[in-house]
Length: 332
Image (tube, rainbow, N blue to C red; front, side, top):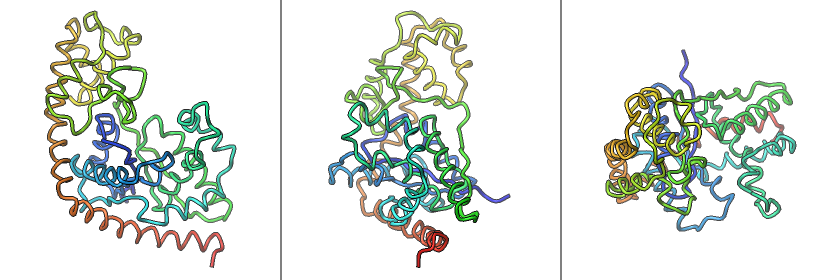
């Protein structure tokens, strides 16, 4: 059986957090064991909203450091930054001419991110799902790990690939399949269980950053919103307690257990007990990653070497595929 060719990317827009680790990085590491994997620091996506140039450069290196600290092996997987391979932007333009405005108008993430003042949003923010499609299709990726908030974009990518193949009557692009993790919950804010844990949240107490110290982790979990009543016995009772559910889900994911087993272990206990246990396992898993991130950031020459080597490998694949795509379109 042929190996899957897996592609995914992470935006370099600030320090990565627990949600990034459980929702993406941990899965990236598992996928590299039995598949060909390409992991990209998507800096072109980052600039759909203005970024300070110095901070962006630092964040590209820090995201790369987080990849490596989480267990990605640059000898097994291709790790690079998106802007270093011009094929992403070139293919994005071609796909802009394949995608339809009606398709983009259905993208709910643009509506969420642009908010009420959509007229002032950048064109890049509107069409970035086409760039995401280019990222995936440039390497003829067969599989893409996706979370709930990216499913719609992958569906668009599949539509674009199918439209291109149909228009030119050639099977140039494989239709990429989603890789959806089993038993993975969205990691929500520690302050508001109805909102996703986010790098952009003003309060640092809303998230566990991968570089947090043991003391910071204990403090944040202690202050995390939960419930005044003891931990309930049934899952249905958690429906109206999103913050409590979030803490139990995080503990379950880190403990490689199910929510049902965790609830059976914790039912009737005070949330202080759960928070102590959660802090212990977070310190055990996250703190070593944070230390490695710091170590990698102390050797920026090594990080740049990893990125440059990855860019060369990615560009070799990209140029070969782009030549075929351009020839199909009719370019000289």
